[in-house]
Structures are given as structure tokens and as C-alpha cells.
Length: 244
Image 1 (cartoon, rainbow, N blue to C red):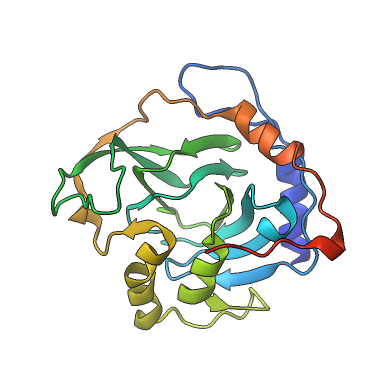
Image 2: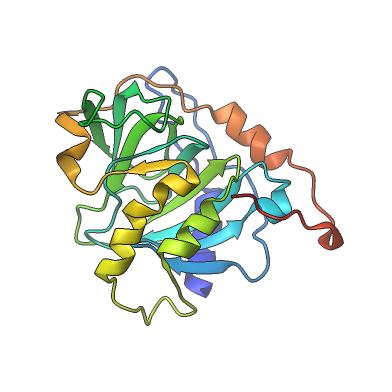
């Protein structure tokens, strides 16, 4: 945990290069104060999440997790219908993928009753930040032999922590992890629609083909800054329950 916190501090002090293809201005990840006693979860895709901000202290505006991504870890393509998402890569090395099309309803399933998508992929550099809008297929994976790190922001926080609580495994020591089992992988897919997510069970279920390089996109940096830095502090005695 001490090592993870030190990495977070280093990440916050680093100057980031935004992922938007049409902007060159450097960007640093917004400052935030982690909540005390954050929940740690081993996700079915191998990520080790530390949920440092949740709706209980952000008035439901966002949730934030610092994650350790071991070699080979990362979720299959999926679509969020309730939340937008940012991905910040303190040390790069992770391949992120984004689709071209929008799937605006839960009933639109790529490869089933809607067209499969084209996936744009890029290997991230230290300080890269990407925006994943709702309705757009995305995913990522660590295709290296080294462990890398990722900061997630979901906005609003509409039950994402409840999803990972249900499909993942609660942990207290990231150095001693339980094995990822098939039951959790099945829950990852089957329970996703309860939380506004369509989660594929195989890579090519949603994806027709891949291309190298990310399409021009807006990383919504100002929106991220305003979201995190301008969320009023919530008094400890007035916690807001998380909504599913």
C-alpha cells in the first residue's frame, strides 16, 4: 500500500501529455485526496483496484480507482451506458482501445443485432490520458512483461464500485492474491447489465477488425479538472449512499 501511494504521488506531480490528437498542451492529473480506508478489489480481468474516491464523498459526481495492471491483465471490449470514463497512465506501457461507433441502448449488442465495431489501439506513454464516453466500446490490456498502473475516473458514480464488489474478490494485501476463478469471470459478464454495462465474453464478439493508432478525440481535460477539483468536500457525518 505504501508503494502504491508513493506511485500515486509521483503520478500527480508528473506532467501528462493529453491523448487528444488535436491538442499539444501538457496536462497534469487533477489533485485529489484519497478517502481513508479505501476498498481493494481483485477484478476478474486481473486488475488490482484501490477505490480511493466514491460517491459517498464526491456527492455521486464520480468514482476514482488507482489500479495495478499485471502482465496479461485487462478487460475484454465493453460498453458503459451509465457513465463516462477517463484513463490516466502514470507510466504508460498499457495498450488502450476505442471503438468508432456508438451503441446508445442496452439492447444494441454488437455482433448480435448491431454491427461489430472497428477498434483503434495505441500503446500508451507515461502521462497519457484518454476519455471513454458512454456508449462507445473500449478496453485495454497489458501486453508487456512488466506491471503498469492506471487511474480510472467514472462519472457519475452510479454503482461501479458495487459492480466490482459483486464480480471481483475483496483483498487486503496486494502481495498475497487469491487466484482468479472462472466463477468471477462469468459474473463479470452476466452481472454487467445490472450496472449499465454490456461486457463481451470474447474479444471478437463485439469487434470486427483492429487498426493501429487512435482516432482524433477530445480528452475532455477541462471537464475532468472541474469534476475532481471543484467537487465540494462532503462532511463526514453526511455520507451519501451509492446508487446502483
